[in-house]
Length: 388
Image 1 (cartoon, rainbow, N blue to C red):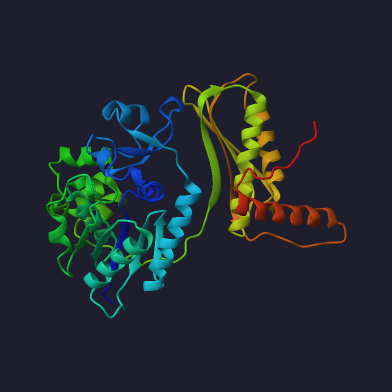
Image 2 (cartoon, rainbow, N blue to C red):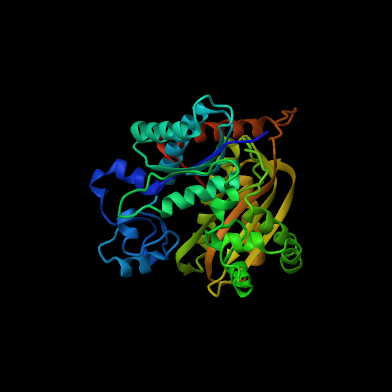
């Protein structure tokens, strides 16, 4: 059966949320992210900042050189997550067939809606704008690939320092014609290296790829070549998936200055283990593998892991396992640029209370109480004491 897929992207989402919190930022060049003296990067930037060449993922120091008047706003991920959930509730009110692909993006299968796709999109944009004061751009097509590219085309067509509020609809049967003139880099699977190889063949647009023999693309690029050929012709049969399996949960931090302080590394590792534990419990998951990630100042990256006998979602067990790995694999005095901890091998937690498990049950009840306090008052409102 033919599908109608809607792709929604919240325009400069972090910045839009910050403007709602502080209206004086509207129209100003500002960026959400880390501080330049702490190796911060731009997580999101306003459209006024983009006029100066500022872009997401850019080092904040470079952003300031491009735009000396740039206002820097610290990220507030818990707030962005809360607003994102409100947006997703609106989307699920339109159709239960919603696939959230990031904090500010989602696919919707609107094939069965009674109204026209364009009207559904206009109404959806208006509701998100009126109720949450957020701009959004939408692409509509017969599959996910073309719908997402349609959104990008609509956003790129916008001019000036305001959100685009793009809406691009690709009629059924016109997918290949729509893609034909677009740059090859806009096609899924075409990164900088692949684009360079394609350019050496004279393939600079998506249409160029579509017209090239598929068997030769397979010979040159392996199975990715088959995908390139199919995608360039607008073919994509993937359905909207309403659920995703979480494979791992992790936290990491890059220090503003490399550190060899044992106490600081231990403290940070415990704090991140607690964040991982809280996320596991929130998702009603537990994991059997604890992984430690380390990066030295020369960018050498080390990952080590341990598999536990039983799944865990407890902060202390995650932290102690990660600390054991740290002490074993970090040379004494070795400075650290980045440290991270994660848990994988996820599944439902095992909670079997036996005759001698009273202490474990008390620990879990304490942990549940702490989680409730953290949810209400913030992560640093209450912390566990430690014996000296």
